[in-house]
View 1 (tube, one colour):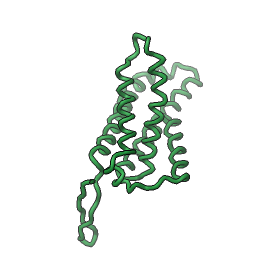
View 2 (cartoon, helix red, strand yellow; view 1 turned 180 degrees about the vertical axis):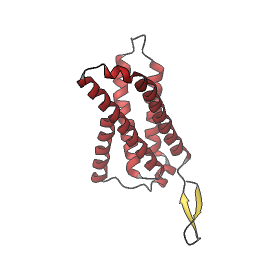
View 3 (cartoon, helix red, strand yellow; view 1 turned 90 degrees about the vertical axis):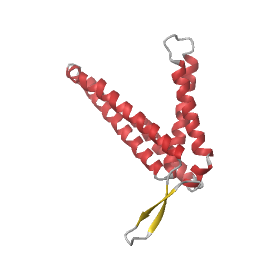
View 4 (cartoon, one colour; view 1 turned 90 degrees about the horizontal axis):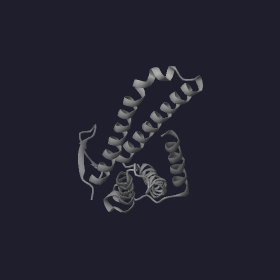
Length: 173
């Protein structure tokens, strides 16, 4: 069962608010950590090379800058989704589940293809798949998570909206 806290309303009456389960907060912190890591990587890789971008052709400059803008928009979209996940929005949970499925589907063939490559980091990629599968199953199966989200019944409309947002996340990241 989720922990509850009380806040005071404008009428000075206590109001119960549900806190997200610990595992859900841990998943959100995991995503925030990864977003921060990617932003640091952008700053360390992109900013020192700005002078080199000015020496490229116009098409390469255009594609590099738009690629960075799309990456930053994708990161902002993922940040938005994770914050809504913490607030108990079921569509955000569905997107994270679909995102987990997509990561596993993309990584498994990549792992099997590169098993004989000596420079391939097998344990890192298997770790990503294991963590992603764990996140997906936790969001689907865990009872406190289902209670926190109110176990809303999935409709075709909600699934369609989630798939559209998933496609936007994939395009912008």
